[in-house]
Length: 234
Image 1: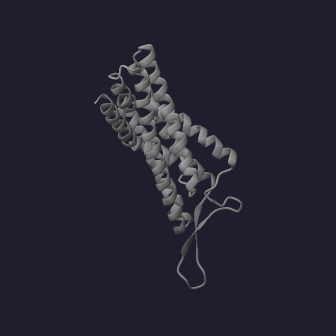
Image 2: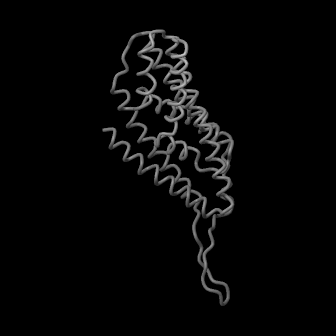
Image 3: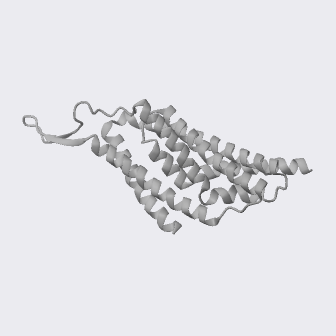
């Protein structure tokens, strides 16, 4: 019976991890961090790195609670929550700035007797292909790890993961709970990354103007969401 009860706890941990991964701030952060590119693998890698950072912090906090008997200060979560909002603003601003740097704009002109019409135009050498320089992509993957660590320390993650393990008197079982919780988060995030990458690839067929409009909306949305998040965490 005890073994069955523990398996039930682990099953709940996996489900809780999957649901937690889809929190609004997580989704907005990953969507903005990916830059709304049309690369399927890149979106999945961002999600995987985010989940790695998220899970590593939970394991660290869990080890502190289970092996050292220390309490996690509430101020840690509050500060992390505020920093999540700041990160969202920075990510959103980065997307908007990237669009401005590309200097993409509309040109209105007229051919013969036809009515004036517009063309979405970018200056030569600045065509947007949805691909980054490898070094930049590598840096973004590290950034995803650090942001995942920040999310792991913030708000509901310690509550969802650390509160149940306080009832498990075996530290190893407590860490196993956190590992399964992290696995659920990883699986859910990988699924979301695949959907995001596939969606961007599908939307690419509608042209540069549509993609830039979506990216701009995501950038502005991330900044607004970040401001609301900071206000709510104060």
